[in-house]
Length: 267
Image (cartoon, rainbow, N blue to C red; front, side):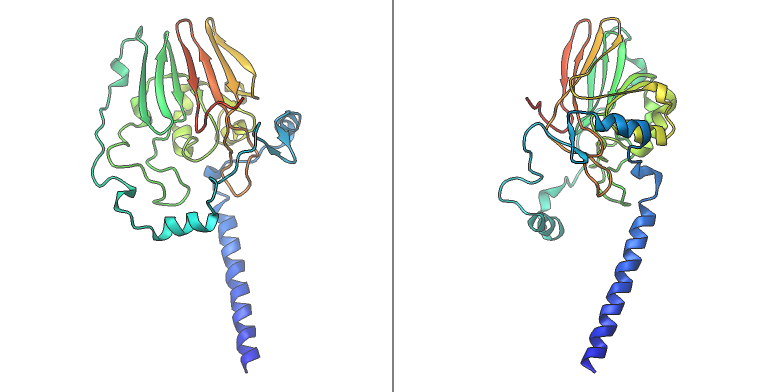
């Protein structure tokens, strides 16, 4: 009798796991998850000195968790820590600037939170890691913007000369925002592999500048950008580091700027 009950329980568990696996697989076929590099792009990636054992690597050992931490501990804290200060209880103070009325000959930087900002430098307009959908997660209601911070929309922006993407994590490469920006964007600068997502989402390959660490690109007379190493990782699914993460060094006629993304410069 007990054996029959155990057998039924195991069968039920196997069926449940199979259903969950199929459900997750179907869910992850949505376009927002992007696409893994393939074809000529994958062959180019395999030639990178930063690509080994089927994935991109940091220059130095970079643990996924801080010393002494564990995945179980992180999950436990996320699920059961009831700290009231985990998120603001009221709107964060912010100021919305009318981007269309800013002087064309002025230099400025507008920060949107996290690693996202808009810069006008020596007459050129740069947008870095924009996330304007109100969420940085594929799950409904997940990783929502704090109250008061989600005040800009794609419609608020003039034409963008250069869209800079540091890596493909959800809080840096936002599907809805990137799709909406397509008609306003002249060129996109990103690291190896990220272009696969962009093409999948409708961007013309001719608008994508996709490079490796230490590659430099002359964007326009007096404007030069160099992809530099960063200590981080990448991925929009369970498979990590199929695309490269990067920091940028941007040189304009009057400015020298380091754009770190989610990391610091790695030497």
